[in-house]
Every structure is written in C-alpha cells, then in structure tokens.
Image (cartoon, rainbow, N blue to C red; front, side, top):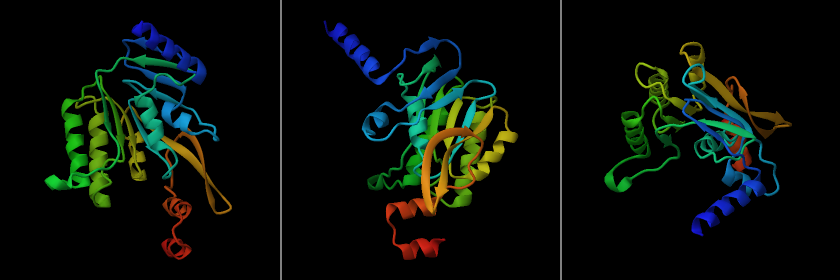
Length: 238
C-alpha cells in the first residue's frame, strides 16, 4: 500500500506540473529539452518560469562555461540540471556514478576556516573522488580570494575537468571571470553559454534564457541599484 501511495503521488505530481518520464540509458549523454527547476518554478506564482535546454556528453559538449549577470539565473540553471526529475519537455539521462556540487558560500570560523578555505577543501574532495563518469556542478570557483588568484585557480580547475587525460568529466561551470570564455577555442569539449539580460531605460531586465556564447558584462552596478543601494554610491561606482 505504501509503494502504491508513493507511485500515485509521483504520478499526480507529474500530471499537475507537466513532468516527463526520462529515458535512462548507459550512454554518457545528458540531454534535457526545456528543463525547469521544480522548486523555483512552484515558488514563482505570478511569473512564468523560463525553461532551458542542457546538453552534456563525453565529446564535444563535455564542459559548459555559464556566464551572465548577477541574479540572471545561472545557479538555478545548474541546480535544475543536477536534480532534474523531470520537469522538462523531454530528457535523456545517461547514468553517472556521482553528482558533485560546489555551490554557495559558507565558512567554519570555529575551526579557523574561511569561506575560501572551505571552498577549496570541497573542491579538493570533488577532484579526488570524481571520475570520467561523474557530473560536476561548480558555481563561481575562486571568488573568495584576489581576482588574479581566483581566476588562476578557476582556469586550472576548468582545464583539469576538461582534460580527458586527467578527469574529462561532464561539468557545468558558472563564473564571472569572463576571460575564461577564451577556453572554448583552446580546449576540446568546452562550450560557452550565457543567460541573457538587457538594459531598458537604465533598468536591467533578466530574460532568463540560456544562449550560446559568452557574456560580456556582469551588470554588477545595475544589480546593486536594484537592491536599493543609495544613488550616491551607484553614481560613484559608475
């Protein structure tokens, strides 16, 4: 009876929320058409959730560098890939041995560990245990230290993940280091994606759509203005 209750609950949820049964196979491909984040979608009562595609495999689409403005939805896009089940039009999911994530900032001051140290510990653990059959979701690696150190670490991690001689795992990598977008032309299997936004009369509008190519701006000052920082500070920052 309990098993039937669970299956009926899942079926009702799928019908109500337009979920799709995925195709599960032994390939190394992850293809999601019009994927959505199940939790974020349900919390957005008055706004339409913008679905996005995801394509990762072991060859040409091994590593996705995701750029775009603050608040545009990079983390949501990557998290929905990690927990898809399956709010999408369709999905083909090749089995992975593990899903590794490095998302969010935290610290452990009691043991003397800064936010950056915690991030590096977690990253070291991921790289120690990940295999070519793993899925890595990495959000803004290297942000807790100086720009040059952070970008150097981020690039080295990206190169390590992309290199089949070292790891070669399917990886989604969100970053504000737009210089890393140059890796698409230098490393096989690396592709650039960005979440679109545009300015309208001095106001930043998030379009939430993933498109090919790298972003050229993080619009940090515009996001600070949206958050309500005083005009004097916004003007000085500009």
